[in-house]
Image 1 (cartoon, rainbow, N blue to C red):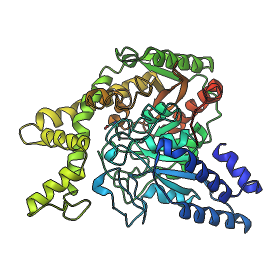
Image 2 (image 1 turned 30 degrees about the horizontal axis):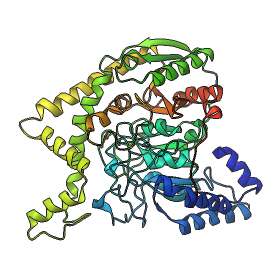
Image 3 (image 1 turned 30 degrees about the vertical axis):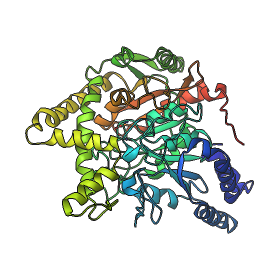
Image 4 (image 1 turned 120 degrees about the horizontal axis):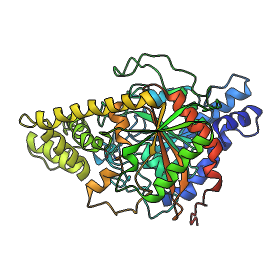
Length: 487
Ligand code: GLN
């Protein structure tokens, strides 16, 4: 059921908001013990939010756009009076005294909070295995990862444990799990959506966006969360267009650019490659023109990102010092020990690794060689995109070089893990909007994701191309069945 179908049912009184919430809650109770997509569920709050929607409907009031839509929220978005952990022992007991701008907008638009979802600790990872509270499984194959870092939000939408969810994307954390779980994941233009209340990882890259079952729903959620916010100085002060308006407009004549370098990668799985090229053919059959474009520095994005993101993380995470915030070690006998022990005990090993890399890259002797150099390469990557957009309207690549990998398979090999973001990172470095949507399944029955990238603030076109592809390719209609052993 799409959000707009739900709206009709609610309006006509076919299903009440409370009935819908009850249905999701009972499904969560029977299935989520296998997936662990949620860290926290608040039935009482969900029910009371749903009841107020039902009351508004009975009173004949006009319903807001997302009335009664059950949402799951990545647990790095602050929710007032509800624990927000970032999947870290450091914030295990943190109860924010304020609501993030994006979630506040959802609740004002009638959305219902079902619960908070699992993530890689502080959103650092690609598999949702670094969570301090246990990993999430992929609903298509429980022995595999759902991707990350927003794995809980992706798995919850894929297995119908909410209607839509929010995630955050610093280097691919919405798109890569969307691709591994067979759902739609949208990372908006940097600055399109407020970051206020999103617990910071790498501030020049972080962006909040939706996970949904279809493109039209992604447009509806973006409509609500987009827009200027005086509380976030990087949030753009530009009008929000109507994202649903052009979805049905033909893409005939649009130029789709296939980024050459992405298809020449050694590590690119052949089924993933074939499936994305087939998606390009589908777009061509709809009247789009396929052009080959080159972004020579595209694959340098990964090394650039792994200097910039840890550098910003090392600064952002300095606030967790055991003094004023988060976990405090019980064993410390002096101030120095208190900070070092609190950080050593409160942060997991991936977070510590990032802090070490970032602190090193920013240190006086190395800042020019690493951080400054990375910023220069970032500019070159942005220029490559600029040039590519002279000959293409929207760019096309696979979302991730592979489908979902086995849980534990990259545990001792962080570089292998980092490589799964090879194709998503450049859009973050350039601040561009990008979407992942299902384009097929591999022989093992695992979803494959197609990535589309548009120019700055060109979400309307990005969504139009994605919608036209989705409506014509009908990928999910021939999806294999999800098997759950529910007792
Ligand atoms: N997987 C990438 C990382 O580990 C991206 C994470 C993200 O987008 N939050 O940093």
